[in-house]
Amino acid sequence: MSTYIPIDSASSPLGQGASKTAAVGPSLAFDDQRHLTAHRWLVEETYILDRQDYDAWLDTLAEDIHYFMPIRVTTALGTGYDTAKDMAHFDEDKYSLSRRVARFDTGHAWAEDPPSRLRHHLSNVRTFATENENELVVESAVLLFRSRGDVLEPSLLSIGRVDLLRLEDGVWRLARRHIAADESVLRMQNLAVFL
Image (cartoon, rainbow, N blue to C red; front, side, top):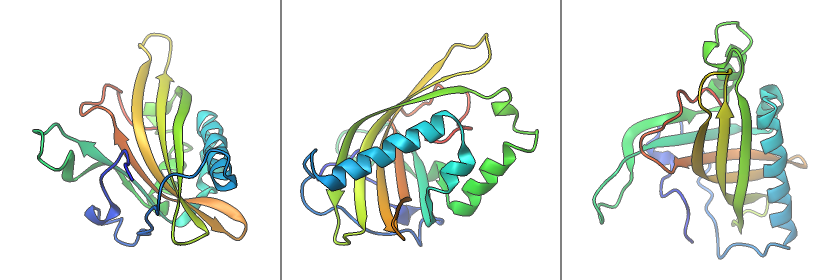
């Protein structure tokens, strides 16, 4: 299986307790009900993120979520890695994500006051079965368009994601998200948004 992100949570202190569930076999057919369920889940999440309803987004996360975006580095061919060891843009669990969301209501989240206008363009969704019938590994690509105020140029961020969706009490939840930016130097002013 080829993935966008050749990393795992083990390289992160907060990721030590994260699920180690891996994909099994080739990607599911596009008309497979599991793929359709995962794809719809991602589309609904995208709309939640676009309207910046972060409290609703927190409700879609599993308690043991690991949200991880290591820093990409440029290395020579054959080096065997393309992320910086022990460095990440995001290395979050449910508690730290909830604190980031709560900060938006403090009046001190200046990076998002006024709030950005966001559009997450979701594509290239592939779903993989796992050994656990209640978990799916889902790869996707996202192009984030972000504009703020009336003066600054809008910015774009292209990323690949590998997610773990888990069925808990009849509800699918995000249990792991690994994010890889498609550039090593981000041109966005800050990352005060969720990917």
